Image (cartoon, rainbow, N blue to C red; front, top):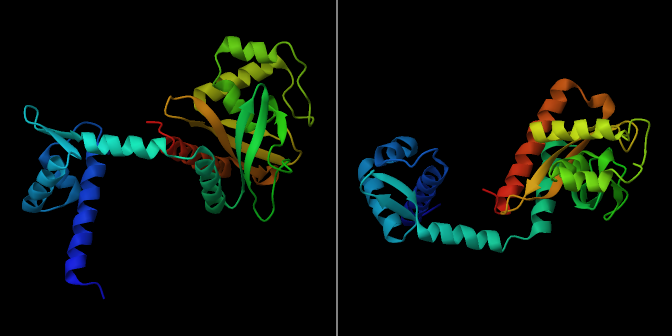
Length: 257
């Protein structure tokens, strides 16, 4: 049984976290009334809590506009968390979570020139993947993750990588026509994700999304691979939502705001 004193401390901590989330996530800086309405905390208790948070500099109050902002201590704490975040750990944790949520094979990929390097894989019971081991390399044009990372490049850098070479053909469905590839990259830029339809393995599709760092650079991509026979429109919409949400989550943990 939890002692009443401990229960009070836990409730106070939960309320403080609720308030901080409201202040940080609000579309515009909230007033006391807005915070009270969103949190459901009694006014007298909330007043005391806000005083405590301001005293510890987790929240800052503007007396002119009567709104609250994240305080210096909260910003410093957030920056410290981001600076100690391990890139590979966050990618591994992210694709593992994504695999558990979808039941499909997931990958984490970085770019090396015009190639996609697979640095992480979480396999389902019936894995759909051409990736045999970590460090596996494929032409970026033939993978969802590769397309996402190519799409992040400025046009001059993209053309410098692609124009002089002959693109590898891994399956009959691999995009090797450069005009078609550039059209697909423009589509990826527009919608924020890539779909690979059997480009590197027959019978397998994948949906990929970009991972950003705190400098707003695409530093990796993650994907979900699925049997082409399962790739119905409704299922692909579900997987697209899941991979974009997870990529956003990983990006935020890497400092992308």
